[in-house]
Amino acid sequence: MGATQEFTSGYGRGLTVAAAATGVVTLGAVAVQDGAREALRLLPLVALVVLAVWALLWRPAVEVSDGELVVRNVLSTVRVPWPTYRGVTRGWSLVVHTTDGDVQVAVAPRGSAAAGALRRRGADDDVAPTGGPPAGDRPVRSYRPTAETVGDAIEARHDALVRAGYLDGAERARTEHGLRPTRRVHVLGLGAAVVLAAAGVAVLVTG
Image (cartoon, rainbow, N blue to C red; front, side, top):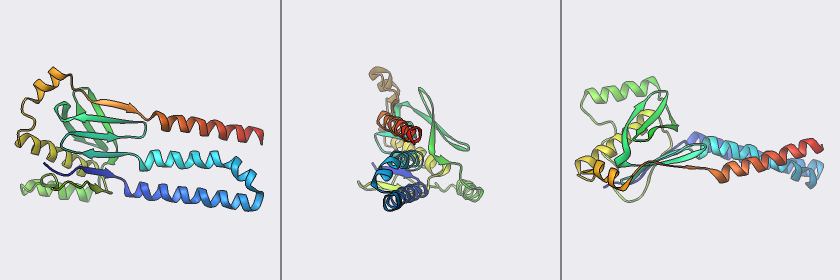
């Protein structure tokens, strides 16, 4: 029906790149001033900081497609098949309601008052704020996600799927096939953080 929409933070990506660049410069300066050995000792701490910034600011995202809704947060990724979707709530951040409970969306904080006023005015004029899903096969990426814009995109996609008949019999299919949201914990990222933290503590303890 439409292109996949991805919502991610451009500000967060910029900060992640800045953190990585700062880490490289710091390691280089230490290597020049104190030697490569000291730079290697500092490497786990620098890597841990960059990993934390990446996990907090770069990785979180939302993907809205014809097949499912994917919410990627700091610690886990939740995949929501459309038959299990039950709506959204726009508060201080976006909340997706599913048959298995609520999913907080880390990348979609509440927008500004001006954005809310524009959204309400669009609704008063019977103008859809986002229209339908974007056409085409290539993914469409937005770098300024808010609870309002992401929520609108999710609702628009769901409404379009309903109108097109793709969700006819969705409740029966959900029951018969046992469809439910799935959560995958970011084990590799958490493991890397633990290893780097342990290495950093070892460096501090050994002086």
